[in-house]
Length: 145
Image (cartoon, rainbow, N blue to C red; front, side, top):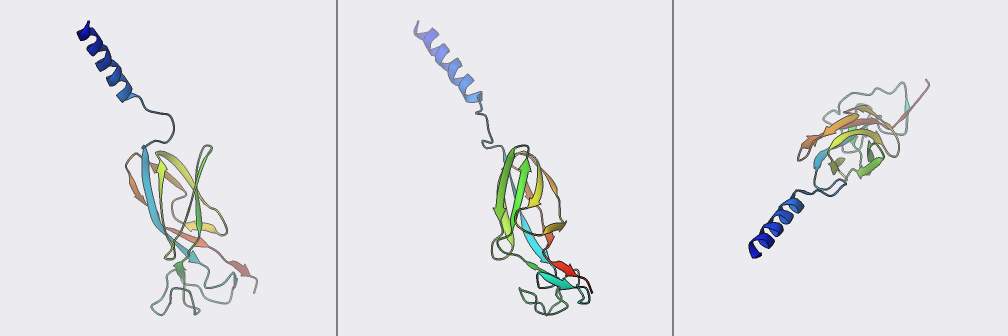
């Protein structure tokens, strides 16, 4: 009788160990990267002011001259959407972000202002993966010359 009870407990324990609760659980991956702004230093950019694709050596962290191109953008929201799931992360003061998200295919968009002009807009995340996704966003409105 004791042997049968012990075998029953052993079988029940093994079966419970294989059970996985529904939901994201630990099947997550990690996504990190930087968000750079493009727009040459202001919310309205005249067409006559030249923009470069990359900053020049004299560019401070915030653009000061007509030759500055991209700079880190703090507090920028990236939205990761998969089906009805929606996760949001914000950049830090250096424009870096980091988020753990469940495995699956995720669409990436902006949460506040601007639009993504460079960077993956769809990310496939697998369990335990570490993905680097850098973005350039356009934050400015170009005025007609």
